[in-house]
Structures are given as structure tokens and as C-alpha cells.
Image (cartoon, rainbow, N blue to C red; front, side, top):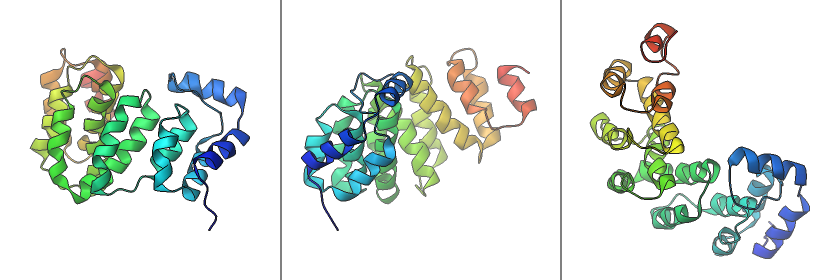
Length: 220
């Protein structure tokens, strides 16, 4: 199989550049990062031909597609947990953040003791790391993470009053997925937060419950 170094990956992604697409995606992602407009399939294709030694150079580029390729090269192994954690200082959009969370979730499935790190992240000054606490757990539970419900709810409780929109969306996502399995429990808990927690969280959390039960929180 052919391999490409960071330089070749950069050239490949630039060759796929589309200025109009870049402008559209930059607006959609609300990111300050540069975009080529190459598309995520190009980043995934490049990642398959890269090696782990190229991750740092690509990540430090400040270019969305190169940073995405770097993430796609990271294996879901315990040794990479802290690497992924450190990457959140450079993340300013939900796409890169959620891809990082997907890898973290796979690691969490094998090492549930890392839950303790998620608790710590809820207190971070970085909103993307706070969001990661909820999103990593939401994805992880779907992938077989064995963490008791009361511990999962400790994460959401610590973030229910968060003022950041994307953190709120992440918490709502987590609670929405939990409601699929523990609907009565989650709705009782949401009632306690009604009037205090953001409606962004509440609305997302009840997206998949019946219309009748949803109307108790967001109107008919």
C-alpha cells in the first residue's frame, strides 16, 4: 500500500480544494480554522495513507481538513487518551470535537476507569472539553461502555446550568439517548431542572419521546 507523509497529504488535500465549499462549510461550522473545501471523504482517504508520525504536523497546521486527517489516524488505544485530551485546546468546532469524542468513546469502552477524567472535564474552562465529557459518554454507552446510570447522570448534572450553547447541545444529546432506555427516570429528572436549565438542553433531551410527554416540556 502506498503511504504519504504530511507534505504529500497536504498537497493531496489542496488538490481537492473548492473555495465555495470552503466558505459554506466555514460558515456552517462557525470555525476560525482555514478550510480547503476538500470534503471529509478526502481527509479520510488521506488518513488511510498516512502514518502516526504525521499526526502532530497535520494537527498543528490550523487547517480543518488536515486536522481531521490527523484525528482519523489516531487509534483508539489507551496511550492516545491524553493526546486526544490535549487536542481540545486547538478545537473550536463541534465536528473535530465529536470525531475526537468518537475515538475517546472507543477507549472508554475498554477502560471505563477513564470516566473519572470525564468528571474532571466538566469543570474545564474549555467549553469543547466540557462538551466532550457528555458526548464521549453518550457515544461510549452506545458502544458498550458499562457505567451505572447514576454515574452517567453525574456528568449531566454538572453541566445542566452551563451557559455555552454547544455544551448544552452535547448534554441534550446525552440525555436524549439515555431517555431511549430510561425514559421515566430522565423525564422526572428534567422536571426538576425545568425553569433552571437551558431550553436547548430540554428540547434536545425530549426529541424522541412521545408528543404527549414532550409537550410537558416544550409545548404542543
